[in-house]
Length: 187
Image (cartoon, rainbow, N blue to C red; front, side, top):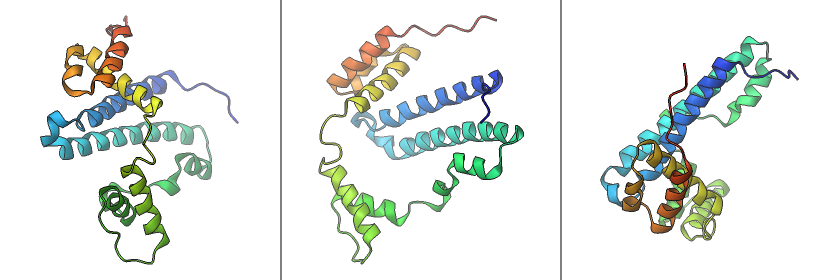
């Protein structure tokens, strides 16, 4: 396997794209909060798809570089996990509908389908707290980092208390407190 570093222009571009994704992910979390419930459907979908599209862009740039440097197409397809790919244009699948039915406690369609029952049960697990019952420290820390980063970047740390639960706002404030205000790179 080739042991070369990522070219600097590609590395810088990937860093920029991942930063954009992180900001979009923070906005997805932000729009789940009750104080802006009026726009949650539109904005969570827009920001989630923005994040997804931006990560796709990063993946395709890296893939183009790999292809340019001679990577075999079957290897590239394997790394891109193309078997997992599906288009958003197709809309929600039956599996998604079964999972949300389980989350919301609505009846599962009368189907003799093991996959449908599995997805429904998974949704029930989320709703009943089986999968998310205990506070996941990693998830909490990730959310605090995203909120704290955005608050620091936009110099709006005080706003954290207006839309986050107190324990998450406190952690996000700590994150924001240790971050330096970004400075432009020297020319």
